[in-house]
Length: 342
Ligand SMILES: C[S@@+](CC[C@H](N)C(=O)[O-])C[C@H]1O[C@@H](n2cnc3c(N)ncnc32)[C@H](O)[C@@H]1O
Image 1 (cartoon, rainbow, N blue to C red):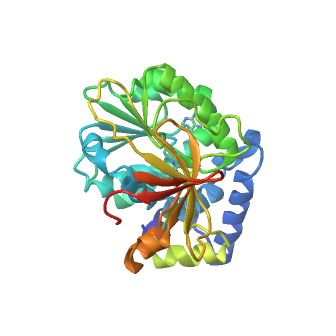
Image 2: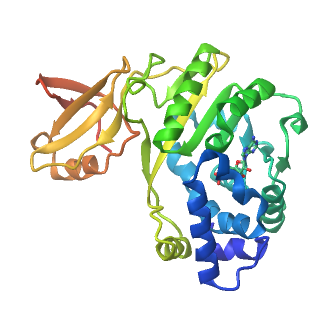
């Protein structure tokens, strides 16, 4: 999705690039304010249009990068009805549909802000008029469940909080829940409470946690988050530079939960939750292992070819890994990666 594609369908037509950049900066300041004030932009056509121009275009590619981490769940997505909560200008409804070539049923989006919904409808009518998309303002307008259902929270849990999210989950009765949320510490601390509620309600955490045990970060001044490295369209990339915002390395909170009606064998693995700068000798990571324990590990460069080392250097937090321990030192374990390096 490029700026040129979306521009004719913005609610507000920006007179100049600098007017757009100014609005993006106002919006971005808004997002770093208190949670009580975070919704201020919902009633301003100009800020909503800036959101669509900047955040829709930079968030749009996220879904396909997230699917790199969730590849084996693709069929589950294709077989389900999909409901995006807090759809905004339509970001993930469009990107999910495009990702699956629209070979999925109706994709629903729920949006409570009247202007944001108006913006989503305008882009839908301009760019996706022949696609099966339903945008509504509340959960009671979603038709009765007819097959397995995925509910997705996309940068919206961050605004609505756990109580509202749990109400949607109760009303919509999903079998699968996906979170694609900002990778920030305040969000993580709240999300962790929601994770425990979902596990208590019978959901199994499939991503990122290797098990449903207590998160090893729960009592730490730290947070678990993942990274994606995103390649943007040229015009989008230029706008990120003009606005001085890094939208290339994107931290995120990605979470996938399945209930017991979905038959899916969960693999046993560990997950990289932090990467450190590599040294002459090796790579150092923090891993969360199969028992949800935090361990620091080192992978020696001498154990791999030049090509493999190049690939390992690109490993990001969020990636799963199988390994054997070659040496247990006091401060960390030395490991060897199992399987092919790709
Ligand atoms: C940051 S935007 C995210 C938009 C879009 N999902 C994206 O990722 O680009 C958050 C959206 O959530 C919506 N929202 C906040 N609380 C909501 C609620 N209780 N129900 C539905 N939508 C809500 C807001 O109106 C806003 O459009």
